[in-house]
Image (cartoon, rainbow over all chains, first blue to last red; front, side, top):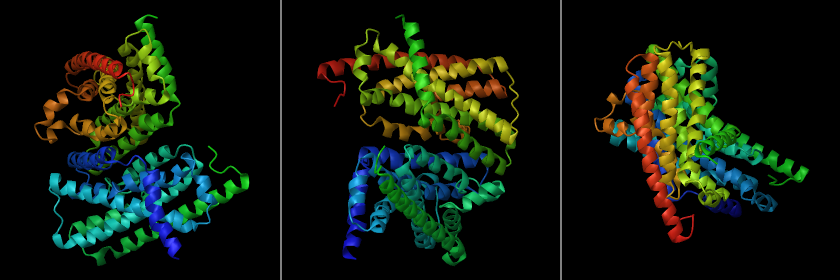
Length: 263
Length: 256
């Protein structure tokens, strides 16, 4: 148990540092903070012009939650898929380490980073766009953001597992990030989207979390969004399970065909 | 080899190279179409469906900017990583002539995004493709693409001093979308943004294309595309001269 916990926490941090290798301040600041900052400003201004939402808060909350994907989608994809690209997948799979601890441990630093990026997004909203949620709602808002970041990290696990088998995992990660902007109600109310698009959106992470965050930011209590939060949690669990399953299936397939980390 | 032929062959080669890149498929087709769809639905949700052509043109220009930014901003870095930078610099032709087709190709490839958003808008959202000044529209697109390509040349020559040009490219995508009024008017932004936008080719490019398509004076922004393009070319030539001198002084093209 102790070994598994060590693999989960220490292994996760080491893997994150090793595989998300470009994450240094001079790259982190423009990519992980600068880009989300301008994304929030862009969509809030577009929202003002289009009159699509009910005020700036709709776009600030939607994008501030969604930018956790900068870490959760890209970071998690790299934290898993780069094992193959850096040639370390073979040694990793040769170890007797508990696979669940290896796999889920990678999500911890990704989650922490995603949370930081998301909180920075809310800070941008407060500092530049006069976003002022009621003070009493802040703890609940933090809880919702945490849960949504977990859900987005789980989604990243699936993409990372796909990346183990695909040459273009960056393509997949980028496409997923942009599609989340379209399908998850980040900038467009789900009621405006065609039925099939909103149905897809409801199966993705973020969608229910963003809806809950908006309700809480406008003064609602946790109890009023409990249904949304349980759904977001179920989505997170489903994606984590799917990601882990895909990881194990690919591991067995590579052993069977003797093409471990072959590019 | 004559300079025009060098530019033409370089452009042809780079265009073919980009056409098989999935990264550019994402930048030039998928990303603009996704952003156009977001804009269409936002405008529909806000009851501004009359602005759908406005959105389609803006989203197309966003794609041209993204392609130029990532393609040109990293042009020297990519050649450095591939080990071809030394060969390009050592070629008998001036380096600016060698680099020019590489950056023009990125904006030209980006022009696919304009076609993609217009076709997408027409097919899925019934965006009316009635252009008020079709001839000026046909003139505005190459003017915009050329000015962005030359802006790319300036970025390629200046980003080289920053070792992590890709991170800078990540940062600069949204601010230029905002500051040049690609999807909403600059008048929504603070007053100080307007003079900044005058320096940016996408501002004049989108003005030229929009005025030609939706009505208005397209001649002035087309002239500004040419003027800003000439300024970028002059600055890029100067920067590349500095870069070459620094590389020779340090006896390394990596400049590290």
